[in-house]
Length: 454
Image (cartoon, rainbow, N blue to C red):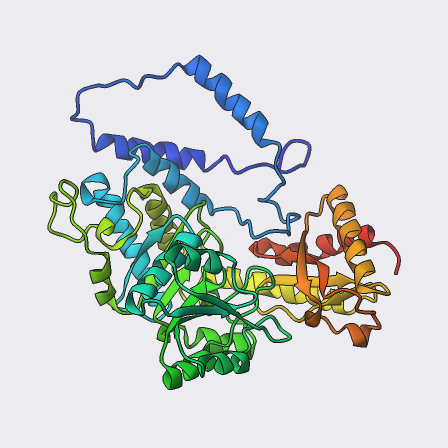
């Protein structure tokens, strides 16, 4: 807290960075002196100007920011990332990032163990889009020309990626809860020509978890690859308070052919840090290429030999490794309890919405994303009211999000709402910060005031 009692960034941990930097510096003490070319006065002015410019942001780091999926990195990740930047390793070839490449392999192996794999192939990426691109690129190489299927609520990147790869892409309808409809999927599968089905474990709009168990049963009958896009929800298999449908899906994730997880979402990492994993390490043969100069410093595997990306920040690997050392990916560990707290916050908030005559939740949250409509006589009026509440909440310091969702996600008839549009402009909260559980009352007070009387 500041002297006036307001918000204050963590600065005490900078002392840890100073000591760690001295430890790193000591390893290179035998080198001749070489002073950096920096003008401290000019640099100070520019950095202070950057700080001033950065004030034009929403408070993404604060619990009253409950809109988009923006989660502050853990202090250990910030420190480890900053420390690595004094070396600035490149995790493409080992001679560009020897230590950080080893740390990446250890961290990725930890993610693979979390989903139930000992044998695996995988690496970090710039984010979920690049990770999904690699997974679908491999799928396309193994099933050339065959279609990629994903739900209508899957991330739009899958359609874009399919276009880049020159592969057919089709959307499959969702059920009432935003999950891929297994019956609709089977009707499409009987027509043939399907190479890959994407199962989204945590859609970015509503946090819905596709029925992976049913998709795997269809795979056994029809034959296709299963790619689990768990960019958002990948860590939630560790949570102890999932409902049965989500728990059933996460318990079968080890049977997917490929998995994407974004550590820069729930993994407490700075942007950008994604990860792609393959169950069958032999797909590494598809990456095979020759470089006239890159891979001769070691006979060990260079991460660039199993990645479509070339230069990649070793600092991301150092930050993830450090975070996983501090907070191991264990079912009963502190990291898992943080996930459970986020989901508990979403359940508590959703219950308050359901009990209030001004609001209509779409459905109970499966992870930590809550979506709801503002009740009115017609869908168009619900949408207008939602936009007004969104603006008024922001004026009161509560930052929500808006989402355009299918009207089928809401029990409009039961609520006595006339359906004059097929989509509803809805309010949305991503309660992904563990401290959101302690802030549910404050969030509700701000929303209550913003919404006004029933």
